[in-house]
Image (tube, helix red, strand yellow):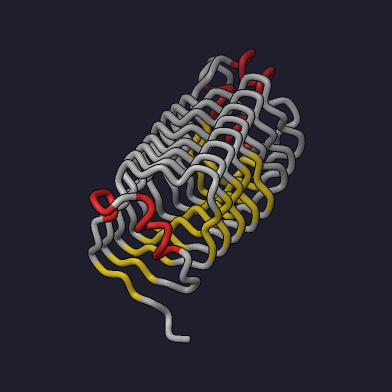
Length: 229
C-alpha cells in the first residue's frame, strides 16, 4: 500500500474528528499541517510521520503514540502528560514549554530540539536517546534517566532535583546553575561535561557518588583559593 501524504491541511479548523480520521492510515505522512489546540485525549496514534507541522498548545494527554516521527515540528506548549510513547522521534523540533509530566518514553529519541521551560517532572524513560537538545530552565524534577547516554544537552538553570541519574554518561553537556538537590547520582559520569559554580558544601551534598575529572575538582577548589598541584 502506498503511504498517504497529507499536505498543508489545517485541522485546527477542520476539527479533531477529521484529524483522527486521517491518522488512522498507518504510514501516512503529514507535511506542513496545522493541529493547533486540538485535543487528542485518550486515543492511539501509530506509525505516522509529521514534517514541519504545528501542534501549538495541542493536547496528547494520556495518548498512546507508537512508531511516530515529529520532524522540524512546532510543539510549543503541547501537553503529553501521562502519555505513553514508544519508538517516537522528536528531531529538530521547537518544544518550548512542552509538558511530559508523568509520561513514559520507551526506545525514543529527542534530538536537536529546543525544550526550554519544558516540564518532564516524573517522566519515566527506558532506552531514551537524548542528543543536542536544550533543556534550559526546564522542570526535570524526579526525571528517571538511569543508565542513559546523554550527549550535547544544555541543562543550564534546569531543575533536576530528585531525578534518578544513576549510571548516566553525560557527554559534552552543560550544567550551569542546575539544581541537583535530592538527585540519585551513583556512578553518574560528568567528566566530559561543564559544571557550574556552586558552593562546595552544596556540590558535595547534591553530587554525592557522581564521577568528575581531576581538572573539574581542581577548578572547584580554585574557587575557594586552593591550588591543586
